[in-house]
Length: 69
Image (cartoon, rainbow, N blue to C red; front, side):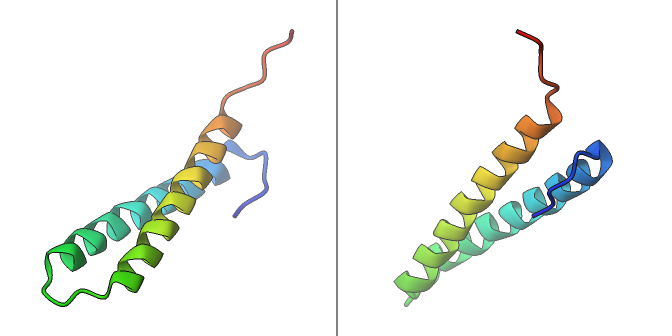
């Protein structure tokens, strides 16, 4: 995870995380339809996908400028 105030670096990290999130979604879908799918693997992939979603949300909020109160 990047701890940076550089919007370009945050955007690059967001793109990478979104790509990994999509890839995990596809892998979970394939495993769900495969006969004899390993449930533990599917659970781990889903947990990773949720973690990525949280990371994406945090980075997206970092791109929103703070407004003075």
